[in-house]
Amino acid sequence: MLAFFRRSPVLTAHVLLLGVVFVWGTTFTLVKAALLDVSPLLFNLIRMLLAFVVLAAWSWGKLRSSTRRDLRAGAAAGLFLGLGYQFQTAGLTRTTPTKSAFITGLVVVLVPLLGAIPGVHPPQMQPTRWNGFAGALLAFAGLILLTTPPHSAALLSGIGIGELLTLGCAFAFAGHLLTIARVASTLDARRLGAIQVGAAACLMLVTLPLDSRPVLHWNATVVWALLITSLIATAAAFTIQSWAQKHISATHAALIFTLEPVFAWLTSLLFLHERLSIRSLEGAGLILVGILLSELWPAQESHLIALPIEPISS
Image (cartoon, rainbow, N blue to C red; front, side, top):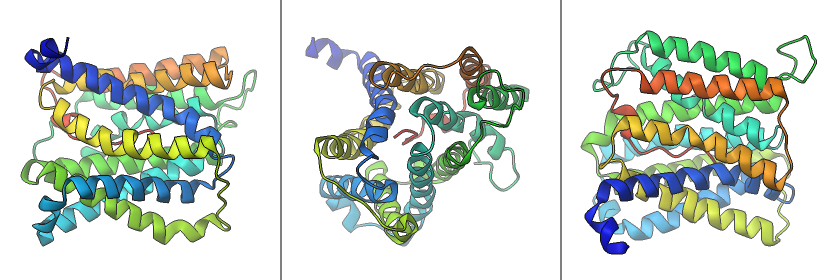
């Protein structure tokens, strides 16, 4: 079996990337449970520090030869990455894992929208076409349906602080992708990955006082959540995705990424017994359709999605 995968790197890339997306999706529920005993910003700081230690140890030789350009690029990417995590985890304490996952998934729609802004558009990114704007409209209509309570006539009544924070996370992760798109082709992936994770950890340290009184009660759930999110969902996921997306197309990668909120919903249903109303299911479906329309319709594939992403999850 191992020999077969070695002879078929394309199949291996698909399997590994699917595994990464599965981990990202399932960690929403795990982190939600851990946040009962640890404050969100402190959780993020510990997670990112652990991931940075692992990546720095693995890439120490490359880090020692970092240039100022490397540090600037990594710091910019780390700023957006750190903001994305801070918004996402803070929002997760105020909304459900399923809603958090589907709203975070809007990053795939936001990238072409933000990329259409002059000065933001990366040189190698395909121009935003009609399907990008149509996908955004469908996805945001889905967001309204997903968050609106059943039988409520006020369609915006379900968008609270948790949903708004999570939407902010989607914008931050979109900024992270656009930043990576500008610099990844000319920088070493391992060096860039370690620097941006380190920069994200610094941001989390600076913003930790926003948590008012950080809380941490060590238990098995918190330990497992930190180990899985830092070592697997961050350090290992960066490495695996960087390799996998050298062997598969951007379209295939985008299709696999749409499974993240699906995995999150199934995990939340299984462990937290979270059930979506008919209206919420329709909204989730619209978000997935909008994502697919944005990323799978273009005749020419965008290179943007083929770059290392973290995110979205978790």
